[in-house]
Image (tube, rainbow, N blue to C red; front, side, top):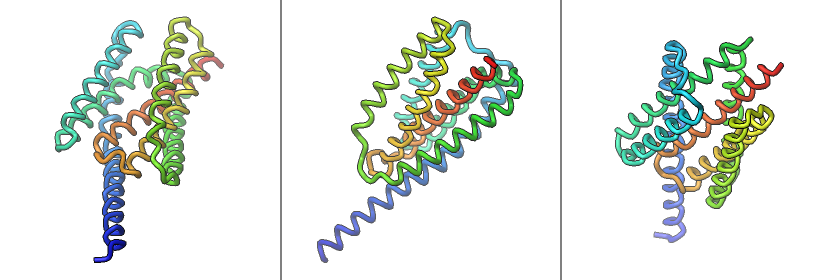
Amino acid sequence: MDINNVSDIRTGGVADTQNRVLRNTYMLLAASMVPTIAGAALGVTLGFKGFGPWWMNFMILMGAVMAFTYGIERTKNSGSGVAVLLAFTFFMGFWLSVLLGRVLALKDGATLIAYAFGGTALIFGGMAAIASTIKTQLSGMSKFLWIGFCVILLAAIGGIVLQMPALMIGCSVLFIGLFSAWIVYDINQIMTGGETNYITATLSIYINLFNIFSNLLSLLGLTSSSD
C-alpha cells in the first residue's frame, strides 16, 4: 500500500474522531440546557436566596464546582459521566436562580434576561466560528487565560467588599471577554485533538457559557438599577 494513502487514511480517521467529539459535545451541551432551566425555575419558584453572606456563597459554589468536576472526571468514560454532568447543570441552574430572582425584581427584568440569553448565544456562535478557522493548537493560551481569570476574580472580590459598582461593572465586561476567549480555546482543543472526551469538553464549554450569561445578566442588572 502507498505510504501516502496510509497517511491520508490516518488523517481522515483523526478528523472523523474530532468531528464526532465536536458533534457529541454540541449535542450534550444542548441537552444540558434542560436541567439548567429546570433548576433555575425551581430556584425562582422556591425563592432561593443563597446561604448568608457573599463569601459563604462563594465558598459553597467553588466547593460544589470542584466536587462535581472531580466526579465528572472520574466517570467521563462511562454513561455515568453524562448523568453527573446533567446533575451539575441542574445545580448550576438552581444556583443561578439567585441572580435571576434579583433581575426579575427590576423593571423589565424578563427582557433583561432575554437580552442576556441572546447575547450569550451570539457570543458563542461568533467564538465557535472563529475557532473553526484556527488550524493550529492553542495549547499555550491556557496559562494566560488562568492568569487573567485569577486577576479579574481578585478585582471582582475587591469590588464586592469595597462596594464599588464601577469596578464590578468593569470586571463583568472583562469576564465576558475572558470566557469568550476560553470558548475559542476549548473548541480549538477539540478540533486539533487536544480534547478527545466529549463529556469533559461539554463541561468546559458549559462553564464558559454559564459565566458569560451570568456576567451579561449582572452587567445589565447593574446598569439598569443605576438608571
